[in-house]
Image (cartoon, rainbow, N blue to C red; front, top):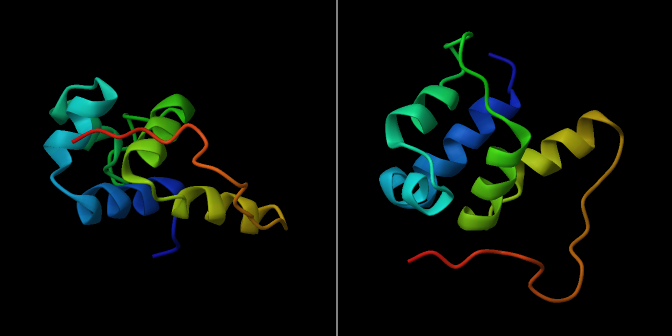
Length: 88
C-alpha cells in the first residue's frame, strides 16, 4: 500500500504514547480522532489543523516530511523549540 498522510499520522499517534492521551491533548474525542486516522475510512477526513496539533504534541514531523518530499522539498528544523506542545 502506498503511504498516505493519514497512514503516516496514524503510525505517529500509535507509536508515540497512549493515543487516548494525544486525543485529550488536542481536544478531540478519542473515537473521532481514531476514525479520522483510519486510512480505510473514506468518510472521515483528517484536517490540517488536527494534523498540526498532532505533530506538535507527538513532536513527530514524519507527515510534514512526507508532504515536503512529495512536493520536491525537504524539512529543516529551525533553532529553538517552535510552538511544540508539552502535554503530559
